[in-house]
Image (tube, rainbow, N blue to C red):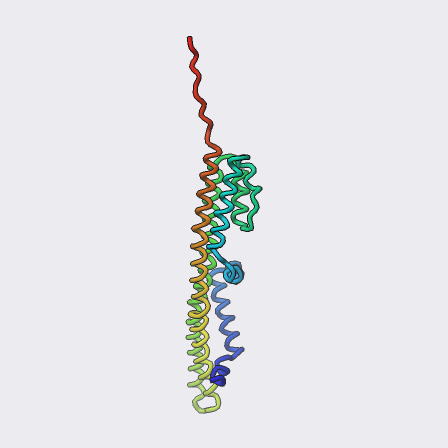
Length: 222
């Protein structure tokens, strides 16, 4: 069994597959998107949307209290460990009208959706490209086999190339790229839910604090 597993690892074939997949993904999505997709692997491993949601809700209670006691201009004094929440609180404090904050929030969430979508697309591209390149390697291996029918010693390496490229393509697509894309999609959707909740809460605070004061009219008694 160990010997069979050892035969499944061919550094040159694996490097050729990874290089081809990287080129295809880069051509389809651009080098910048590919870099962001690789960089997303680190946060993916430690992400916890439920923890971030609970921390955001606790911070929102403090922001609401500060807004009522000291006004919107002081809401950015609430310290949070979440970069999104810190940025949103700073924008809330610097917005003169609730409409300004609403426009910023809508644009920010739209940009976020675009960035996350680009990362997901890269991993889906990798999942699509891997089997195709594996099949290409299989065809190359078969061609090599047929071309070397008169040399039995050359049949083994050609057959190994044909089978290994298919194997690598299946593994990379179904055990690496596709699960990563699914995980990132799930994390993105769960994160978006609590971020939208925070934006809605901040917008309600901004509208409350910026509401015009209604003064009762004084009627002069003749």
